[in-house]
Amino acid sequence: MLWFYGHLETFVLGVFAFGIVLHFVRRRGERQRYIELRAAYEDAVRETREGGDDPAAVVREAELHRAFMNSGMPGWFEGFGRCAARWLRYSAVAALLLLFLRGPILQGDARYARGHAGAAASLRLPGGKVPNR
Image (cartoon, helix red, strand yellow):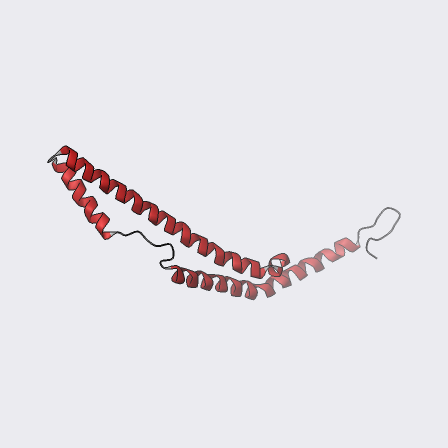
C-alpha cells in the first residue's frame, strides 16, 4: 500500500485524465447519434417523395423533422470547462480521502510488521545462523 502513496500525484492525474477522456467519448457518441438522426431524416424525406402520399411515411418524416430540428451537432469542447472542473474536484476529493486514510493504513502496516518480526527472528538457517543479524 505504501507504493500507492509514493505515486499519489500519478493517481490524481489519472483520475483527472479519465474524466477528460470520458468527456470526449461522450461527445463522440452524441455526434454519432446526430449523424444517424440526420441520415434517418434524409431517408424519410426520400421515402416520402418517392412514395407519394403514404400517410405513414409523411408522419415518420414529420416526427424525424421535429427531432432533427430540435437537435444540433454538439461541438467537441462544448461543456468542456464544466467537465474539467468536475473531474478536478473528484480527483482532489480522492487525494484528500487517501491522505486522511494514510495514517490508519500506515499504523496497520506497522502492526503487521511488528507481529511478523518475531516469526522472522525465530527462523534459523542451517548451521544455527540467524538471518539478518
